[in-house]
Length: 355
Image (tube, rainbow, N blue to C red; front, side, top):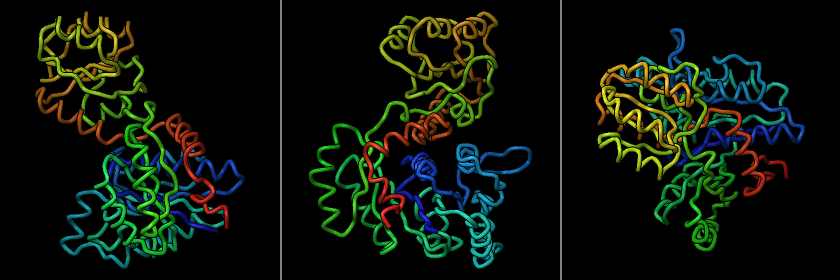
């Protein structure tokens, strides 16, 4: 059996999509695959329990039977971190918990796929950074990184030093087309000269560039006022409806997949937005519920409407933060990453199938 840890230089690098897609690729090659995210960091409260959404996605996509407690042995919440700082969490006991879950999940599998938490240094307060996890579970590490400028190589080199001989290599993800040439001609040869292997460069893909309306609603903490409107559509950008209705109409006709944030009392702006193309959803602020006419038009056009109590500036900040997170929460997104990795990455080296 081999063990592969997918970690990242920073948050929002597409680590989940890569990890689950690699597991799917291994399954397609006939391997029995297990999965675990030792530290749950993408947290959501459901029925009184705080759980990470990434293991839930992996469990569904990979057809795993293990319980969430096994897939995510440590819930790395702000409360947990605070208790750890106060000395109320035992690092040795936590490491033992992770090792026990791993042993149970690894029984009878050919490949254990581990997903790192947040950044590779997350978990330091309880001695469970991703390099610590790799040592504990005897795992090879794949470092997922974005690339926009040569300065990004600093983080790659720091990660490589942290993992040492356990590093299988670096996988660059969501690289803008304008940066691919410089990456391949200059940066990758530079890294290889420093002993860091490149496992591929995956270009930015529009189908993976946004977040779903459902994720956006959770990110802003809003209520969905159009229960029959689909929420699996992608949002790629935010527009602010603090202008005239005509200006909003003109702006949205020149954009696509936008979330328009505007006051819940701005019926004129809401109506104009619904008449324009390019609208992914409406985010209405101030806690003002829109008119039935607006909701009816939104329902007819299949445009989700989300209501938040926050003011417009705060709501815009929340939307932008959610968009920056770039989360992957659908099986379709995983399938697309499977295709991209097959086309642009050294899958055999990633999975260790050459051994």
